[in-house]
Length: 121
Image (cartoon, rainbow, N blue to C red):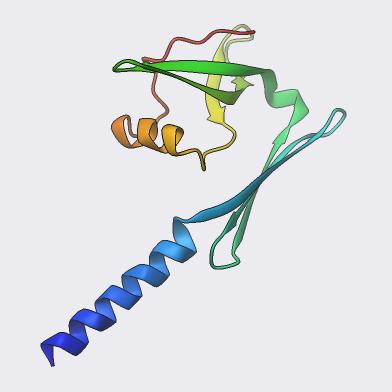
């Protein structure tokens, strides 16, 4: 009885991991006059799509993070702050399937790390 319950819970956890966590593919579609579409395809077949209007985009940058003795580079989208025209309301990382970015996000839970130094290249 206990063994079958443990097997059932393990299978349920594996299905949950495949459905909500394991990303197989990420795509980025940029249409200059409309905006940016980010699509993540999960191992279970589920797809998650996010659309960012071009009017909200302040800039697209390559961000760098220094963790221990490693420098990690990743692509980010900076969003305009409606209250402050020169400010940034949010930093959106683009390709999150990267193991190094996942490593960073696990160490710095949301909101996205403010301790990271941003550079535009």
